[in-house]
Length: 118
Image (cartoon, rainbow, N blue to C red; front, side):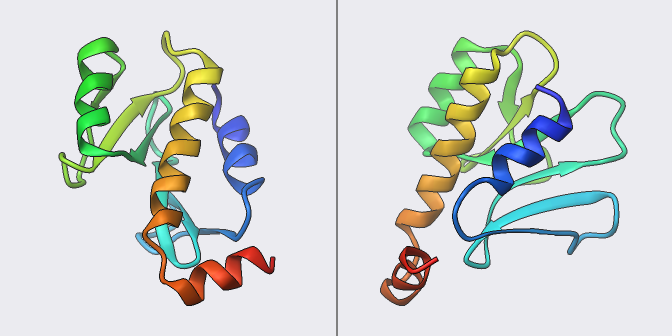
């Protein structure tokens, strides 16, 4: 998956903003102010960080060499995914969905209500 496909897919989700809180070279995707994905624009090889259930994160890391503990993130809750190597776009989209849904599940009642109205 290339970065434009990644961006388009993230932005297609409900309640998403694309921000650069860490400087102009890092894109951060948030749902209702909560981060679920980020990527650097300065890397030679496109990779992204995605939030993940801790047990599922370990399973993924054991199964795929292109999924490693989150770079500069909580290694327990985040994976770094190398998107332009061997991983299928379908799997990457599934991981983006998982990250989004995980963050949505932790939103407050008020935030969930706001999201459902969008």
